[in-house]
Image (cartoon, rainbow, N blue to C red; front, side, top):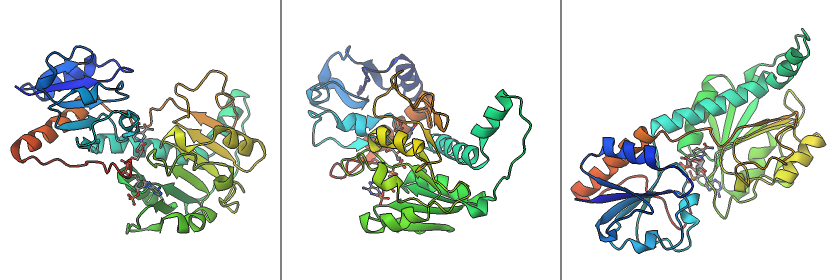
Length: 315
Ligand code: NAP
Ligand code: GLV
């Protein structure tokens, strides 16, 4: 019998193991550190695996990420080089992310922070609400998640543009690609979204230099930032300074350089910021385990698997 191991030292793996037993009753499911005979383990799912654990599985055939991102796996410098890494691509996770993106675009667009403040103070004050057609939303990262969010925002009437490594053709969405088109992408973006993966190339990309290149011609005369990619992409001191001096009008941050966000961070109480605890698109255990079980079945049948990351690109 093939064995499957969860190696998730920072998560409670119990609900995941239960979901995996339900999704693939034929698999022998183990949870680190109780790995049993390591020679039996052919498949593993991990998140921040401790050094030397994955490399200590001599018969490992596929490593599964429990999310769309793989940075928490690639952070292990001892990870075996030859084993493919498969990430999550699933409509449930994608829909959750698009819900988050559409909700935050709309909350900024419809000035919900201002309405909340007025409600707290018992102030009945209607103010100008702007048309979606007059607002340009730019998505950095036009992959699985970025493309779905782009389509849904386009349907709502926003001007939508995206930036990725390679150019895309998506109806109603302007595509920009590579470092050479980044400035052109930024200059007409009123609401900037990051759905980029964390890679050496994207680390720190959201900094004062980038934020100061965004459009100031939108309805609020200053741009808005929404980051649901990874915290490593953002310089939080720059973001705070840009909010304070008006370079940025507002921000929604779901991811942070340090998670949980330290209690001392000024982002918690900043009046122009909406904070969420890295929950834009949760991985639901049974959904993800069903996806992994299907991948294992395909692999056992003909050695195929899909959604393997490119180690050289780190995503
Ligand atoms: P994906 O399909 O791999 O898409 C990544 C996109 O980023 C692609 O369009 C890619 O360009 C682009 N990209 C990568 N490096 C780039 C660079 N240096 N310059 C320009 N574009 C670059 O990934 P996904 O499934 O959409 O997920 C994206 C990320 O969302 C994940 O890696 C994860 O960090 C984050 N995420 C967050 C949450 C949350 O709850 N906050 C949940 C799920 C995922 P190409 O298309 O040209 O390759
Ligand atoms: C969550 O952050 C994921 O990468 O799916």
